[in-house]
Image 1 (cartoon, rainbow, N blue to C red):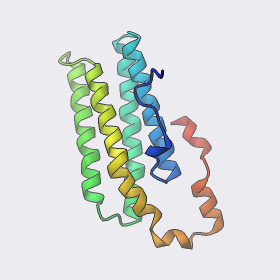
Image 2 (image 1 turned 60 degrees about the vertical axis):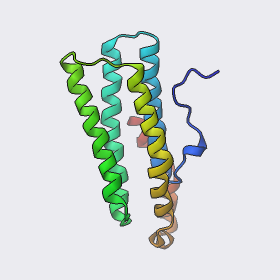
Image 3 (image 1 turned 30 degrees about the horizontal axis):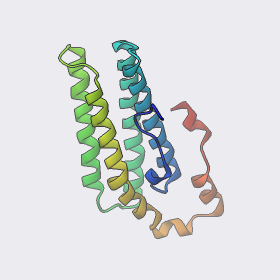
Image 4 (image 1 turned 90 degrees about the vertical axis):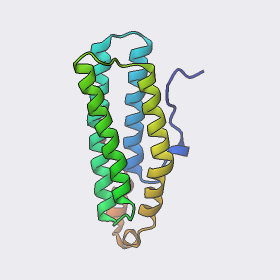
Length: 158
């Protein structure tokens, strides 16, 4: 039996390798936070992981939104609004943690898991379908196509 909060499967793939790799990092960070809470590693450790998760989420959203702009994604405003709302909620939580008005809990983990699962399964998959159907991709040179489909060594630093 897995002790992970969120087990990645290919069912979550949106078909864009870079986005899928970033989603796996987000899932990994969420699982680290779960482990820290479950194993009573302390509020400092949990907060450090939450902050890394928040920072990486902002980076991931920036990449996704850049791809949406480049491909003229028609639902860009709605998708971006979902991103902004989650970032607002995370900032609000961080402020409450700083003032002692909240603690990192299993309820927070559940919220983040449900949000991420739903966002990937619905909103990001719609964007993935759009991205993969953009005619411009057919005009890419074989070199660009290979670069887009290869795992980037620099991802391991994020």
